[in-house]
Each structure stands twice: as C-alpha cells, then as structure tokens.
Image 1 (cartoon, rainbow, N blue to C red):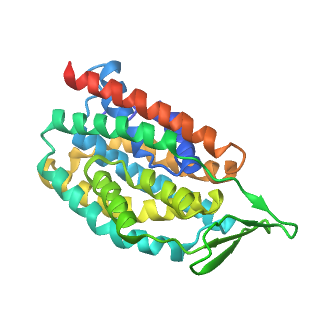
Image 2 (image 1 turned 180 degrees about the vertical axis):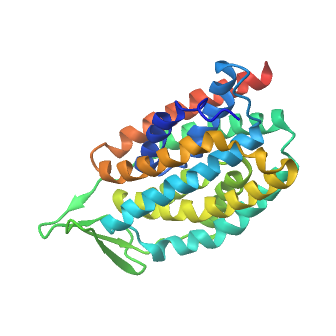
Image 3 (image 1 turned 90 degrees about the vertical axis):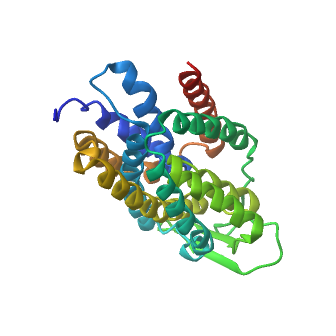
Amino acid sequence: MDWTIYWFMFPVSICVATTAMLSGIGGAALFIPIFVIIFPILGPEYPLQTAAAIGTALMTEVFGFSSGFIGYYRKRLIDFRSAIPFLFWSVPVAIIGAVLLGYLHEQDTFLKGAYAILMIVLCPIILRHTTPSNTTNSDNQESISTDDQGEMRTVTSNTGQTYKFRAPKVGALGGATTSGGAFLTGLLGVGIGEVIMPQLVKRNHFPVAVAAATSVFTVIITIAAASFTQVTALIAAGGINAIPWNLVCYTIPAVILGGQIGPWLQGRIAQRTMEKAIATLFGVIGIAMMWIVLR
C-alpha cells in the first residue's frame, strides 16, 4: 500500500470541509465526485469502487463535521432542542439506507446513476431557496420569525449577538423530507444536510448562523449512524483493506482543520452566494456523472 499516493487530498479536503461548514451541506457531496470522477482521470493507480467511495466520504465527513461542531459549539450557535425532532426521523432511516448500500455495493453503474440524478435534482432546489432578510433591533437582537405561534427560543453567541426565533415545526411534510434526505445519505452519502438547512431557514425562519450550526449538529449525528453501518458492511464484505486507509490518512486530518476554518468564516461570505455556487457545482457534477454512466 502506497501511503504517499493521495498526498494531494490534504489541501483539497481542507477546502471541501470549509465549504461544507459554510453551506451546511454534507462534505460527502463533494468528496464522492472527486473519488468517482476525478480519480479515474488521474490514472488506474487510483482505483475506488463507488460503494467504497461513498463509505470513505461519509467516514471522512464524520470527522469534518465533528470538528465543525466544536467550532460552532464554541461560538454558542447550536440550538440542540431544535435538532431533536429532525434526528428522530433521520437516524433510523439513514441506517436503513446504509444497510441497503451493503446489498448494492457491486452495482457500480446503478449507484453512479442514482447519484447523478440526485445531484441534478438538488441543483434547482437549492437555486430556488431564498434566504430571508435579517432584521436587527437596537439592543443587538436579531429576530427572524413571521409566525406568531410556537415556543420562542433565544440563542446568544459568544460575541454577545442574540438571536430570537420560534421552535421548528417538522410535521408530516418535514418528516418525509428529512427521511428522504436521510435515506439518500445512508445509500449515496448525500442528502441530509441539503434538506435540513432549507427547512430551518426557509420554512422555520431560523437565523442563518443558528441554522448552519444546528444543521451541522443534525448532520453529524445522522452521518455517524450511516457511516458506522456502511463501514461495517464494507469490512464484512471485503475485509479490513476494503477501506482505503492510505486515502483517509490525508482526508481525516484535513477535514478536522477545515472544520475549524468554516465556523470562523461564518458570516464573512454571503449565504446566498455560497448556495448559488453549490447549486451550480451540483448541476455540473450531476451532468458529468450521468455522462460517465451513459458512456
């Protein structure tokens, strides 16, 4: 096993993790295309099956979001109570998706095709998402809520900024959306971060900073459950070497670093700008992946 072949993934993984922390999406959404599209272009010495790529991306993402969680926790922006209703739906369904991946690990073309469709569908969804404008009053309190019902909650950051918002309403629609994202996360490594952030910001009118922090916490619990299931299935099917350890030895330390940079940059880059960039990238990834499948 060549332990230097993937050295370039260290700086790449820092950028991926930083982007994931800023946008609230899962880093696996960016890692999987790198593993499945870019690696084959680099040459035959970079072999990675799609199922192994998904499992590796999710395992890496666990460490990146753990680091991001620490960053947001230090900034005191996470509303743990708001994450619980989403976790109720996401964790068991993500495990089901991960178990299904264990049965489909040899269906490389199917997994690539499903991933391509997912990226193409997510592109317009993210583009349509509109971030509500923030209103700040004189005593340095930022309040984002147009609903006059529900429990009022307050989060005060370590800088003294106070955010007021109402407890999120998940409901049947939110539960179905969260379950769908969680299932796709377990199966394809992408989905939960892409459905939690819009629900918090658009549907429940959360402040963007609190929504990003709470989304990171929700995502990390969900992907940890899915990743453990996927990695266990991969090792059971292919042994301990089914995991490319010479790759994760670079990606894991890098995403831990990127997970600290992302929260530090939160608020310095416009959320809508980040969303448009991510949506465009998803569209390009989806088209590229579909071209590979059809070819």
